[in-house]
Picture 1 (cartoon, rainbow, N blue to C red):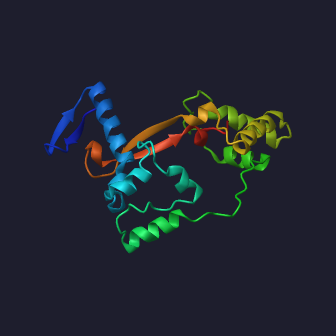
Picture 2 (picture 1 turned 180 degrees about the vertical axis):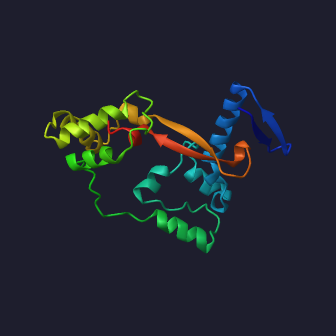
Picture 3 (picture 1 turned 90 degrees about the vertical axis):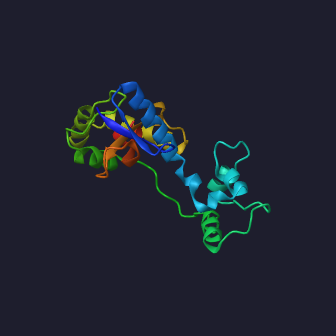
Length: 196
């Protein structure tokens, strides 16, 4: 595969043809892309940046997630847009979302998937789940019921299955040229590919 990486410092394109160099360039680009939110105007204030940066040991990400984030007094005066953005972070959702998976959910999910859908990195083949779905529709539900129970326990206890913690990053060309910086990153999580 031939792809170009734009050297941002030299502002020059470099053709990459070796697999190891390409993997390294893609990895660096993905890391940079994942941290782009730290380059927004709000993050230009160093004291605000520390609150949001997961690499900073005293970050306040947990406060943000719990909806009780209050900017430090040391923050510079924030613009109206920045203040509204922080106000949105302080909202706590009180609506309950039903997360229980039912047999009907299981059947509907796998019934709609096409056989050519790629199997996951775990080796669990979609065809097995399609067969389990057909059996469940015919009244033989023991395997589907077992998978549904495992899934519900995992969700209710906030304990993701080990396999769910893996993902694949797929980079697609967006029509802007074959530079790494122009590729669109899609993250496919294992949990999206198989029920359990």
